[in-house]
Amino acid sequence: MKIYRNSARSVIVLLMALLLVNAFAAGQATAADPRSPHAVAPSQAPARLVIRRIPNLGFNVIVRLWIDGQPVAALGYGHSYQGVLTPGRHVLAVLATPRSRSPIPWEMPLNAQSGQTYVFTAQGGPSGDLVLASGF
Image 1 (cartoon, rainbow, N blue to C red):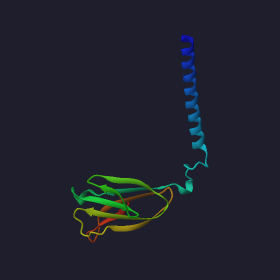
Image 2: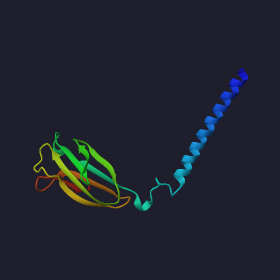
Image 3: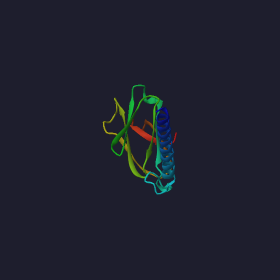
Image 4: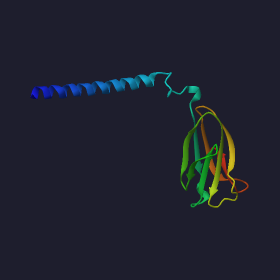
């Protein structure tokens, strides 16, 4: 009876090892297949977006960030946002809370190019509203 039990364990271990190797090989083949639905063509690579919050806005001021009308981040003192954008036209909007001069977010259009990195700094603008300045 012991011989049968050891043989059954050996077969089970062997089957598990084969399944693992097969799953690994299938995953490698899918990742290497350029027609895979998860593969991204170089011309359609996402753009990177970085939004920094300038420190002199104040310790208790939160910068709210929207992309295409959807809220994506609330940046507190010393924080920044890093994300990706699909290539194409987008609208970035920011609003300082709780004490904003205007209850309407400041907006700017952005035509994101594939593979590019866009860096903006949330800071006070000439009219006193919060704006996104490029660079910095």
